Image 1 (cartoon, rainbow, N blue to C red):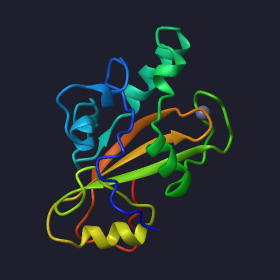
Image 2 (image 1 turned 60 degrees about the vertical axis):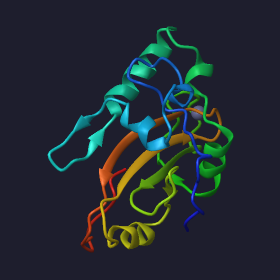
Image 3 (image 1 turned 180 degrees about the horizontal axis):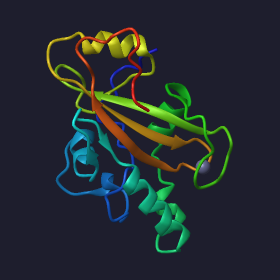
Image 4 (image 1 turned 120 degrees about the vertical axis):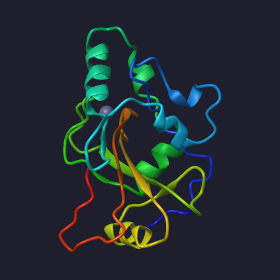
Length: 171
Ligand SMILES: [Zn+2]
């Protein structure tokens, strides 16, 4: 299932490397992709960017009391709506509230002729269809807890233009 373009409405409250609050409150950022691009991640040779170090650091800061829970559990209403209706289970418990089955993965795809706010893609079939289009498309995977509103960018990757039958989108 594919949601209609998110337009500018989805501004996930992803945080910068210092865990200093929602980037959606940043100044001068016009699109979600620009917000994502400001996060620091580790880039692999394949172009995949891993943000789990930043995630761990944010969770450590939370555990140490350096960050308020309200600052990290700040998924906006639109992101919560997408997480409830167009996502897949993360298959693990929420790292903040420990809910066993409320952690969801939302995939935003950016590229030519897609909405500036990205398109939410929930199926491999749709991912394949976009990958075959002309141009480069990048997918950002965000985890969202539909119980406590925790949210964090996990990784991003370029969608292959030819997807082999065995290819599984990174999660
Ligand atoms: Zn939670």
